[in-house]
Image 1 (cartoon, rainbow, N blue to C red):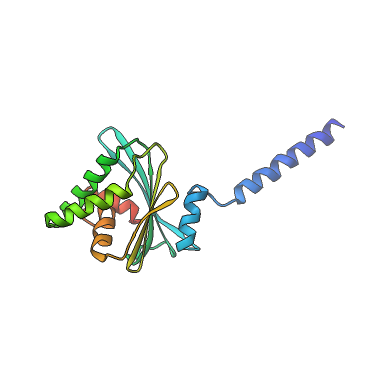
Image 2 (image 1 turned 90 degrees about the horizontal axis):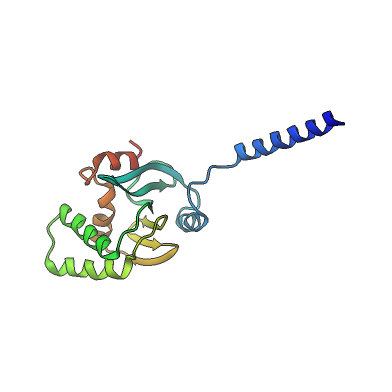
Length: 180
């Protein structure tokens, strides 16, 4: 009788382990997955990278495309924050990253500040930001809510180039994100 129960228990755990092993690994929470599949019904991860500054672990980034190979006309960038960051800091850092790429008139920088003040919110640990580029449009989501969309190609390119340009603030981060 004991052998029979032991065999049943072993088979039960064996089957559970097989189910777990066969289940696809989940890289995103349900909300983020829904946003991604709205634009890319099937997707593969291009690369992942962690952005840290000195002793602070700022965020984990994941880049996805339909094929798993980077193409700059259609992709999704997911940032999962590992730190609380005030909105003002996000706005200022993003504008500084724009300035590193080109010189802009003060009018344009002021319009960026207005956009980012409406778009960005204070992050918490595990807050998720999703940026989607599809052809000549971009959609930005924060915590599952669409917070901005645009077809301004200049804005789209400079915004995503914060993370994806060869001469980014952290080239090794960019290489990992691009799967190189």
